[in-house]
Length: 180
Image (tube, rainbow, N blue to C red; front, top):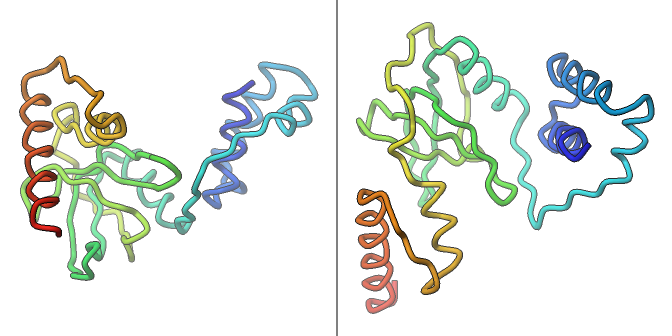
């Protein structure tokens, strides 16, 4: 039931409520529970601290790229304002604390990157097939979660994650010393 309520909430917040695939999913999930699933789901309140609205066409483009195993091209504005065109192999759509991110292999940077979808514009699906493989080696999501625990966190493994976290903490310490 919680999954049904969550799908309803995410569909509403993302602007995909009228999408035929979302409606089909809602109908199938609702049928698993009872005839009054919608009424029951309305009584389950799912609240996030912050909700960021991303244009429905952005989400649709990402989903279409996933479905066709195709690359995406888009204009991306970094946090400091620099903008540029990106061609990526999309690997994972992440909703983290109410914000939408795309984990993808960036062909410009030749590395895994996490793109904040609120800063992506003019997304287009390319006919080129994705070749980047799985995103298992990218620990961005895990590192964000570990940092929430501050000094109380202890990274037990894998070794690559341990070294990435150690480097992240060193960079944070340097930034604090300099007052950046």
